[in-house]
Amino acid sequence: MKKWIALLLTAVMCFSFVACGDNNEASNNNEPQTDESNSQQEENYNSETATLTKDEMMNSAQALTREEIEKSIENAAFAKSLIGNVYTFGGTIESIEEDHAVTTFYIVDENGNYATSEFVMVANLYLTTDELITLEAEQRLSFVGKLEDVTSREETIPDWGTETIVEMVFKNVAVVTDRFEETGTLHSQNASYGENAWNIKFPNNDYLSVVHFRDDVSSYKGTEITYSYKITGDGCVDAYIVE
Image 1 (cartoon, one colour):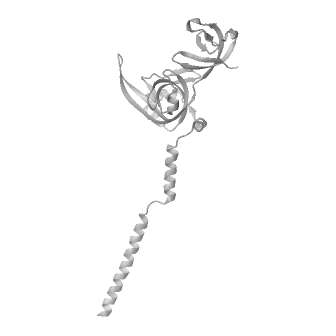
Image 2: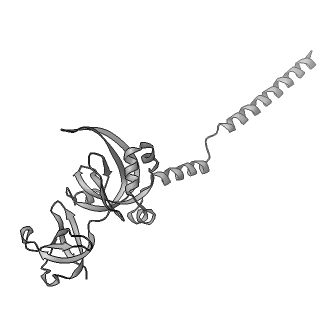
């Protein structure tokens, strides 16, 4: 009888050891991810969400084209496919909100100038506070930024109807410059716009552009000049001749 009891106890103990072994294996399979895998996930997350500096964006940016803008207006799927790209682009300030500026796009390419209407497509630029407080409505600037999202909203326009407005969102964005350069002939003074306002004539174009210079430039009359200027609601202002 004692022999049978001993054999039974031995069998129970062996079964217990096997059960413990199975539990340990299951426990190992359910262990938390290693530090290495967590580190890899964190690295991937940071690469997607890291804020790029202005110089880093300029090094990788491509120019936003009128073709991309026009197709984004008509095709939401195409617009979404652009998310993550870093672009340089021109824009005109429509409004300045507490944490971002609303702009329309202004593109200059081999086909001339191209601008979007605020009732068709805008860009929401989440600039720094220091940059936002220097802006003014109708000012034109050049930007660089990473496209984070593309959304749309319906807006009722008086005497027109309801329009779908496409919004491109740039949260990692910076001002590249608020100045531009052109070359043309200092044609004639335009006193109706002020003391230092001059008409500039461009090659192969009969249109005269009014430019407000900082100083007296009358000695350059009739000659071709390259000048730097800003664009605001008052037109081309704060111009000076680039020597």
